[in-house]
Length: 81
Image 1: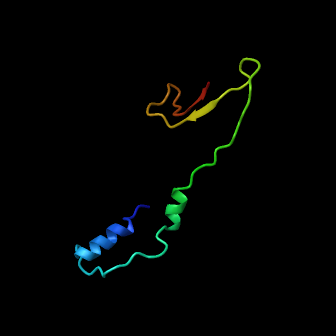
Image 2: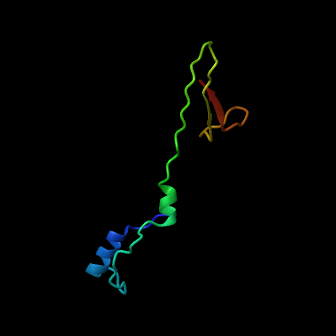
Image 3: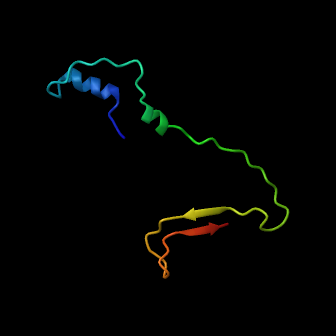
């Protein structure tokens, strides 16, 4: 969901660019629920781990969908690093 910010809507109403649009004033609460949800960020977790032997810590990433399918028809893969 995308919408124009209130400053632009007020500017449009002042210059009369839209027929029938009344003069508007900026409301007190200008952030809608969708905007608040869209601007939330993930909370990063702290993970500290010291490896002592090879392959003790493995990073895995699931990649999908790919543009080209494999010879067996798969369109995703798992990457280990």
